[in-house]
Structures are given as C-alpha cells and as structure tokens.
Image (cartoon, rainbow, N blue to C red; front, side):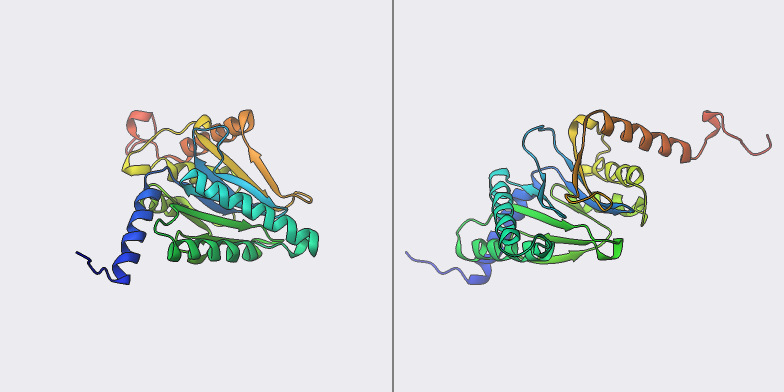
Length: 249
C-alpha cells in the first residue's frame, strides 16, 4: 500500500541522519591567532588527514565520513589549481572554494537519498587578522562566515563552550594551541589528557612567503604542548596544599 511522506519530513530525516553520522567522530577546531589561522583535529591516524592545504593561502578541515570529505578535498584542490592556472594564483580565494563546496553539498542533500555525513571549514589567511576568512559549510550546503574560533563534529557544543572560556583575540600560536587542546579535552563531557600523537595540527601562517600552509608535528608539536602546559601551571591559582601563600601567613 503506497504511503505519503511530506517533503518537510524527508528533509528532516536526511538532516537527522547526517547530524548523527557527523557526531560519531571526534571534533576539530579552528582558531585565529596573531600570526594567522590554527587548525587542530583530534585524530589518531598519521596518514588519514582531517586538515589539508587547498592552495597558497587556503586550507581545509573536515569531520565526518572520511571517504566523502576526501572527495571534497580532492575536488577543491583540482578546482583551485585549474582556476589559478587559467587566471591568476591571487584569484583563488576561500570564498570561491566555499561557494563551490556549498553548491556540491546542497545538490547532494537535495537530490540524493543519502546526504553526505560531513562538515567542513575553508580558511583563508589575509594580510591582517581583520582580512582572514573562515567559512563553515554544513552537510546541506549552508555557509556560515565565522570569526575568532569554531568547533565542529563530535560533541561540538561542549568543545565550543570550553573554547569560549579561554579564547583571547590575537593570542600567540602557543597560547592558541593551548586553548584548542583545552577545548578538545572536553569532548563528550569528559576531561581527557591529549598527547601530541593524537593531535593533527596545522597553520596558515601570515608571514610565510608564497604557500602559507604548514603542518606542526613531531618534536616541535611536543615542545609547543609542553610550553602550553607550563604556561597553564604558572597561571593556575595556588592552594594551601600546593605550598602557596595563605591568609595570616
């Protein structure tokens, strides 16, 4: 017996399906710092990246189903290469790539029975912090122009709340990394201890000539995390048990 399902219900079911798929993975965060844009993902894999370069000043971060956002990454790289070759490298912008991704994801969400379980960010570093561009593109093709910081995937709301506690504009790279790790440590409402081996970190560095994208890994990432942790301990309030000053002493 045939039955009728309203278009509104079909779209709602697709959106619920995509959200549940995205929430099953770990989070990724993107923050502006004084020298550019920082990307940090909770990622145990050393070969399957959630963060990648798209073009000279543009990078990409994604959460969700790997094979689906990898297809988007490859399509973005080819699109940027072709546009830069046909016109000029400076004509390739984050906004242009965000619009292309929005059209693709919007078409898939509307026309396909199964939406893609992905959420992505396209970041472009500018000559000054005010000209940085960060675009979040959701599974249905919606585009949001973001500022300062954002979290996506996993328990994004909890991670965002933790980022909001400590984020400061124009912080140094080490300070921004400490804020990002603080946010990711609150995944699923449980405080976790994150190590360098479980983090994927990259930056779009404003002062870097030509290609701005750079990964931070290995010994350098370990040193930066140690510096960030040391800064937190120095600023932590002392208690009587810690040997700090007490009233009447």
